[in-house]
Length: 440
Ligand SMILES: C[S@@+](CC[C@H](N)C(=O)[O-])C[C@H]1O[C@@H](n2cnc3c(N)ncnc32)[C@H](O)[C@@H]1O
Ligand code: SF4
Figure 1 (cartoon, rainbow, N blue to C red):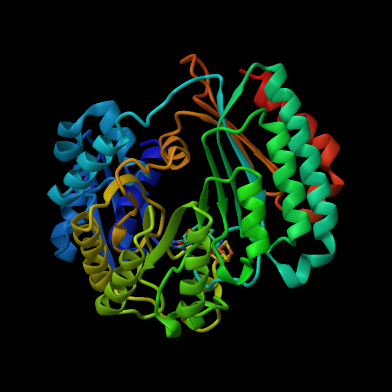
Figure 2 (cartoon, rainbow, N blue to C red):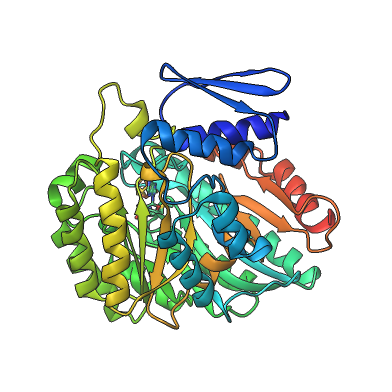
C-alpha cells in the first residue's frame, strides 16, 4: 500500500467524517481504519476504493453526490476516461453526471490549449475586513495601508519585467485577471498605476480582462471609470448573501442595499458582471438562500457563481475559539439543487465547476452564465489548459508543460508576505523568470 493510496483512502473516509482523526493500520493483505469508534477493515486489492466507499455508505446510511471521487476537477477526469468510468468506478450520482454533461457541453468552443498563450494574473492580497469563511492569504487594509504605495511600485516593476519576457519569448496574453483579496481596496491612484502597468505590458489588450471588485464597500465611480479606461471587460461584484444578518455575521461591512446600489452603478459602465453567492453561510436555511438566489436572478448578471461553503483551515470559521454557525449539510444540498433548478430555468448554463477539500456536503462550486458569456479565464484555469503567469505577493505561476515529458505542471509561488515580497523582490524575480521562461 503506497502512501499516496493510503491518503486517497483517508480522503474517501473524510467525505463521510469531515472533522475527525483517522487511524490506519496496514497489515500485509488488509488495512484497518478507525474513525469515531468504528472499525472498517478492507482487503488490499484493486477494488479497495470501491469496497471502502460501499462500507462507508452502509455504516452511515448515506451516499455521496460525487461518489468516492475526491479530486477537485471532475471534468478533467471525464475528458481523460469518459463518463462510463466516472459512473462505474466512482459511483458519481446521476444528478452530478447531468451537471458534468452540461458543463462539458458549455465549454465546447471555449477550450483553448496552446503553449504560447498566457493567462496573466495580478494579485492584490488586501481586503477591507476579513470574512469569517475565507482562508485566502490576504491582509486587512488598516494593518498594511502604509506599505501599499511601496507594494504597488514593486508590483508594477514585476508587471513591466513580465511584459518584456512575454514579448521576448513570443508569448501572447489570452486573458488578464486582477484578483486577490480585493483589488479595488487600493486608492484610485494606486489602482491606476497597476492598470497602466498591465495595459503597457500586455501588448495590446486581450478580449477578456477581469477585475475583482468583490466588496462593494471599496467601489467608487472614479475607480469604475479607471477600470473602463484601461480596458477591463469583466467585473466581479459579490453579494455572497442578500440577508443582512448573515452579512454582519460573516464580517462583511455592507448591507444588501449597499450591494444593490453598487450593482446598479457597475451596470452603467457596461461591464460583463459576475456575482458570487455562497450556500451554507451563517446558519442560513434553504429559504434564506432561496431569497439570495431570487434577488440575484432579478438583477440578471452575466455570470453567477454558486459556491458551497468550505470549512477551510486558516479561516475564522475553523480557528475561532467559540464554534461559528453554518448551515447543515442537509440544507446545503437543498440549496445547491435549488440553484441548479432556478438558474437553468432562468436561462443560465453551468459552465465550470470545481471541488475543494472540506466542502460541506462533499459538494462543489459551479459557475453559471448566460449562454455566450462563458469566462475563458475561469475555464482555462480550472481545466489547466493555458499557463498562468502571476505577479504580486502570494501569486502562483503555473507553467503547463505540453510536451508530454517531465512534470505536467511547474509551479512558482511568490512570497505571500507583502513586506518580504518587497524586500526579496530582485532575487525572487530571477527565480520566477527561470522557472517560467527557461525551464520547459
Ligand atoms: C478569491 S475570493 C475573492 C472575492 C472578493 N474578495 C470578495 O470577497 O467578494 C472569490 C470567492 O470565493 C468564494 N469563497 C471564498 N472562500 C470560500 C469558502 N471558504 N467557502 C466557499 N466559498 C468561498 C467567495 O464567494 C468569494 O467571492
Ligand atoms: S472573501 Fe474576499 S473580501 Fe472576504 S476576506 Fe476573502 S478575499 Fe477578502
